[in-house]
Length: 119
Image (cartoon, rainbow, N blue to C red):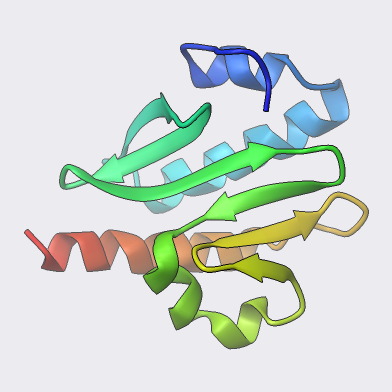
């Protein structure tokens, strides 16, 4: 993790330009799938909320981008995520392979619906 930053833009600028492009595309993918999402920094990484509840987070590391969609987001897409290293509510997308932006979009849309149902 990088030093404390207060905005997503500041966070992304702490990485090399090639990683900034990937982070920007993830950010755009999230915001297109969840235009009503509130964007902030939480736990030192970009974080998104809908209906006052956590939606997804992401963070860049040396060899991967971590994507955090809470356990339910990962459970619902277990088959699609099976080729990636995972934790309980996280998945690692390796930087040496194309990022699955369509899958990220589907997960975000699922989480938006899920948060909306919990209102």
